[in-house]
Length: 486
Image (tube, rainbow, N blue to C red; front, top):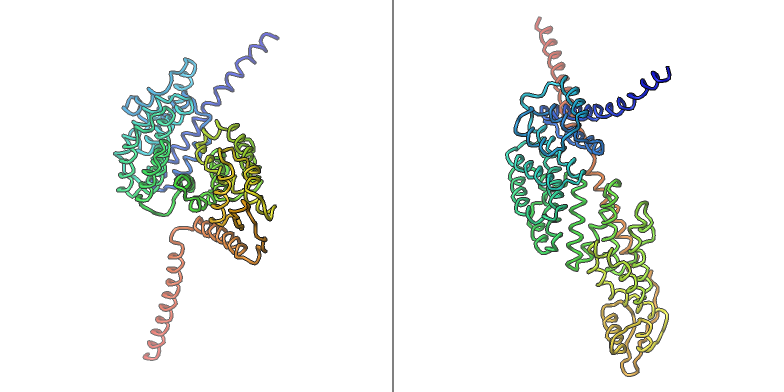
């Protein structure tokens, strides 16, 4: 009896394991039906919802699930089905039995929609990238892009934008990003001719990323300045565009213009933690180059403390104005700064560190010799006094410090500090804050969604009531005239 009980309990775990595969497959079939209904109704929002549901199931995708879904959505034996099935790894015999059992009851579509075909390409491509099969992903993405060039349907635009992103990602992961630059330019031209604005946004960001990956900042700026402008359709693509724009402006020494895109990147999605970390790194560098000190709360955001630790220590060195501490931090985290591609910008901060230390000296001392200035700034040049004199002269000319230079005696004489509230600095600070709040309000208003043609329907209903009222009054007046004649 005990053996019989044990024999009955043994197959139970296998049933629980196999039950997970049909559940994921069933979800994919529901997404396929959603795509079919959206294709027939020409409703793009349902396609967006289908992609969002697919991203939820991304970690559950397996080769057996995908093969079963391909049998359901495509004609077995067709060219597309054979090509996509060749990218998937071969299943075990047990998995094959599960797939045949689940797919035997399903009748495959005789004429699959182009939306379903592109969706199958997208599913297989996501699976290959997650399994780190980058060469197969390159082949799959190239085949999907060749198929997309022959399709011009507005319901495919959302799926095509995702395919463009994974197409570029697959080549970037293999180090062959330069090979597809010409193809991306051709796709951008096709999207422009087809008035595919979402595709234009995505392809423009991919081209900018392609140029910036190889440090081609001038070409990226030329492309960005000549690309068509229109209202953003995707918040994610708009945030990426602002990020690349800020990087271009920073490299071109336009720090003030680079600051405004970095401030707008506060609208980045909360779930995109890695993107927000990169945005915060570049925003910190831009503010330091402008002579500002970021708040401590910037470095204490949830999930970013470890990633922003090198930039926190760098900010502390710039705030103090200690050149030795700045050099030690730059050497300590040199690998991190090189991987983030901010090492060249950090080299520019040396002048800001010296200027900050000089400002602290001018506030602390009413008169100090240039030799002491060179000693406090820790200048390690051949002639530190001459270097200190040139640094002080340049800071006075730029307005960084309010002092005079006594060349005969070798002194720096600081002037008395006045009341900052008697200047226009508070007004400028309030103006920048008010402008930021107004821009955020305008963006929130633009993001509101309303039912289509709601105002027209309301106006037509009012006109209909007025027309009916006029008809009733006219009928009543005619009836009264008939009564009088009678």
